[in-house]
Image (cartoon, rainbow, N blue to C red; front, side, top):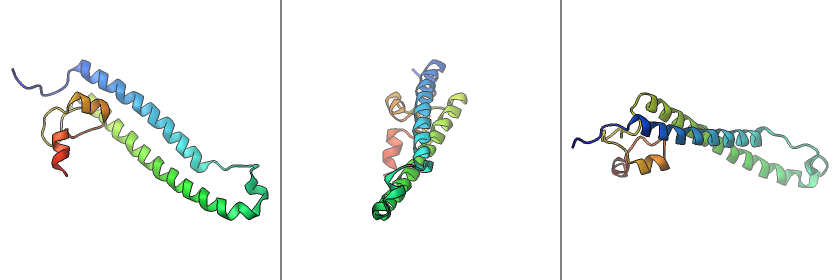
Length: 125
């Protein structure tokens, strides 16, 4: 029996549904992070309590920096998922870019934007 060279259309539909759900959640998380970065609190103790203002500004800056980094990672994740959708449309989804073999379904369910099989990923180390 010949080795399978690509996933069937039905299997690709299953992966597409997984990816679309992940994109939806990732976009919501990204929007939340963006809101955290840009939202200015009003009517807070920062308005009236200069004693604690210096300490709180340092903590706020740090948390905004962290939120910014997380937002960047989330955006990159969304882009990887969108690229996976393109591969589904091209029917090249799930094919390892190094070995040319199919990436296991288990791996794709866990990491739907994967472009390397576990075998190829371990060789990179």
